[in-house]
Structure formats: C-alpha cells, structure tokens
Image 1 (tube, helix red, strand yellow):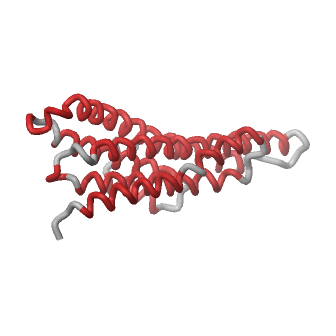
Image 2 (image 1 turned 90 degrees about the vertical axis):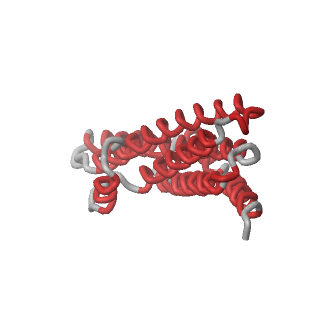
Image 3 (image 1 turned 30 degrees about the vertical axis):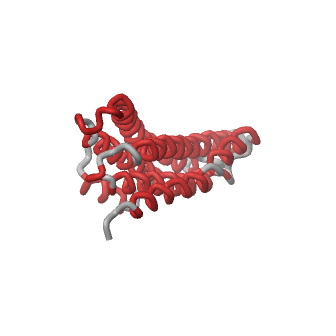
Length: 206
C-alpha cells in the first residue's frame, strides 16, 4: 500500500473488495496528521525558534516515526480484515469444521479490532504533538497544526467504529474490556482536537 499512487489506492477503496476499507483510511488519516505536524515542526527549525529547538527536534522525529507506524497500520488493517472474510468463508458442514470455523472467526475479529485500537493510540500521540507545537510553532503555517488536529480526530473517530463493529463477535471479557476502554478515550480526543482548532482559528486575522 505504501508504494501505491493515490489514484490506485482510491480505486481499490472504491472497488467491491473487502480491503482496503474504513480501517485503512483511519490509519492514513493518522499518517497525514503526523506528516502535517512534522512539516510545521520543520518550518519552525530556525534561529527564530532557537529557544525551542530541542523540543521541535523531538516533535519532528516523533512525528516522522508515527507517520511510518500509521502507514504500516493501514497495511495491517487491510490484511486483518481480509483474514476476517476468509474465516467466514471456511466450511462449516461437519462437526469438526463448524467449531474450527468459529474459532478462526473469533481470532480474526480480535486481530481486526486490535489494529484500529492501535490507530486510536497513534492518533492520540499525534494530537499530543500538535498540542505541544501549537504555542511554539511557526505562525505562518499554524493553520496546518489545526489541519493535523482535524486529521487526528478523523483517524480516531473512524478507527473507533472499526473497533466497535468487531466487538459483537469478541467473547473474551478481558479482550472486550481492553478494546472498549480504548474506544472510550475517543470522546476526550475529539474535544482536545476541537480546542486546538479553535485556538488556531482565534489567532487568525479575519
């Protein structure tokens, strides 16, 4: 996926195939958010911002790492969802096949839910970088901090529904509780993203 053109990816997304789908787009939202943070940080790497040079360098490196992580998660999500569809396609006609199929589905659903749960965590980290960069970044590109916050929000809210759609098939209470706890963090993330965007907009000349 990382070597696809945008047009190729969108054609695959639009096609009647199991993956890529919403989970992959959630991860790519997170990747775009991280890229935007890194771009603003690089525009803030000059003598004018020397007071914050160490902080900005850390933000840049972290954002670059999270971008790569997010792209990898997009690929993992596509593979995980494909595994779900394959599990549902297993035979179930005999007394041996039916439980084996059920077990395969359960395993696949857990994997399919875990990937977007990690995307939520990545989005949270990227939003934290945007919050950190907001007061110290280059004001000429500060609107891109808001763009990063909005992309992180889209990543988290999109990933949330991709966790939730798999929860119904997850029977293990510990796994279910772990995933639900991640889902429950998203509302706070949304509020934080809104605050970043509001702060940027308040500082713009109208």
